[in-house]
Image (cartoon, rainbow, N blue to C red; front, side):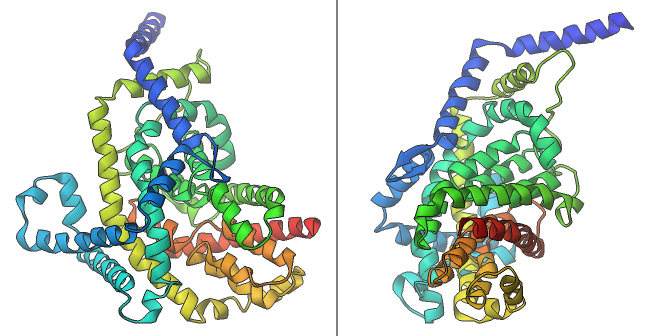
Length: 463
């Protein structure tokens, strides 16, 4: 028996030795360091803190600002027209390519949604049609403000994201942080990368990483749902925009610390209650389980993390294949995701801006806010719920309120709620992560209920 065990250990050691080559060390260390520098390393730029990918995105967005809405409108129109031809003619170019078929040979529902997105974009850019669609508060916000930001961010995030995922960095960090993430948040250690990418860059980047990791077999359905709805926090840069817009920039440090504390408590509680606790702990059927962060006996977490990283690096076929994956990710976002963002985001803003829906819905919250001694509770109540449509709307509502304490609470709650349909919500609904709009609404309310008392208590101490 001992001889058999020794033989097994020797075989395992021999396999590990096969990964310890100069090539694998290079592929692990150099691209991973570049990924850290671009996605996770904070740098000052334009008077705020961002990341390397953010600098690239903002640079190209600024240089193409006059033409980006028109350019994206053209892409939205193509995304609606090509599937019609694909359904009618079944061209060989599309049908023989798995990627092109997935992108353009789509279900009728998604085809109609793309058409609606393209129609909204055309109406907005040419200023024709009902004002509730073309207004600067609805279609104008989506086409001229949000879509260009997404187009610029996803261009670089999509192409460069393999630096984080394909060369061993997530395998190394995942093994190192497993003993923290698993007991506290019920997540694999590699999920810390998603959170950091969101924190320093943008919540949408975190969701993009999460969906890719789920599809590749590194997260279960439950884990992917938890990460996407609890760790895709908005960046420090966006937090500064919100607190400045609401007129309290001098309180940024206590404000952001409040958001972090409330967010961590919500991330601890939400995975332990339905609907997240009832999600299946199984992997994406198309891929199956591809992860193992358990450390073998006789090895430290660091040693095993390096072994896992080198193994991952050994699977890299070359820059060409990695670049191809990145480009496909960008095309999928441009032609499949952004049309949905334009369509559903505009509808969400129409409901928020031109109907009393959220005002009526928030009436039961008024006495709760009054009990919490929040000044101007009636004016603040809609801001507690309108963030489900778009994360910036609470700040818009709150900017007209006189009480600094109330504005502080509104700004903080808008960032801890996380789920908003104009962007994050649509990303998740369109992804293969099994989470519905109803579940997103429930999680949004849960996060509001959990974080609001924490924020209010801290706000009363500050003011």
